Image 1 (cartoon, rainbow, N blue to C red):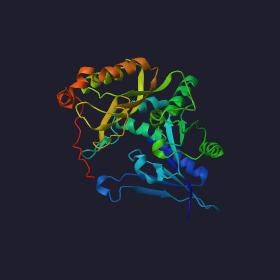
Image 2: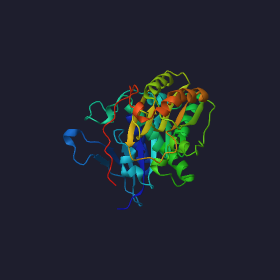
Image 3: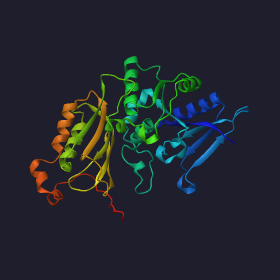
Image 4: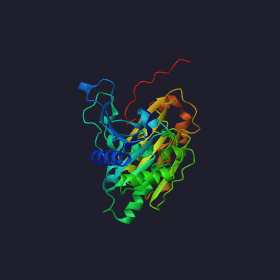
Length: 336
């Protein structure tokens, strides 16, 4: 049977996400499915699927997928399908807390599974916001108007391509979307940081308290000074940085482009490959936050970059610098 365009419901607040998905399935006469990772003892093909049959309908039922937060959108084909609408359900009362949450996403994980990292739940919360085509705020009725404007602007900065809406009922949300629906951007191109690095960041909603800036620097970072700068940033010395992402290079690990991925108080700087040499700058990072001091942030990161003398000393000297950042796994270069 051919189905109408799927509705993919995501969010780290499981009760609100489940409630919304059920309401959406009822409103659209949809076929509700739950997508979640199986426990290790039951793991076969990686996904657990439960279904609730739709009511009889003259038209094919619409799939409504309730996606557990333990699944990442880029690895979920249904979310990457351009016909799908990805709806991120956000509890307005706890949205900022979710972006600062230091808890792991999963308490017990296999070695190397970063879902057990400090801050993994916050990382997933921001990635779901960045991958959505529609961001729905629920439980917003008790939140002050000025705070709602702030939350909606943060969401718009994190994902300029998404519609951001205060939800009253699921049926109304879908009607509003269909009345103004445009072709969604590809999943991996929706995030605000991607738009910022392409100089295309133009969020629909604005608030003077919310800023997104792009930082570029041609010199590699000295890892010890970068660590000190990150501590100052985390302490709020330059405002509250909620999200930063992009690419960077560390002097002690020359020739390797790394992915910079930060949310709340957690940061991951992970190697991409030793054969990627296409970046025109060593550092290219987008930063989004509240009441930011752009000049102070840029100066702090500039201080973390190599000085003239350090730069001219060359990679052999760089490898002897103090490096308190977590070690990387060995990168194996692919043969041409």
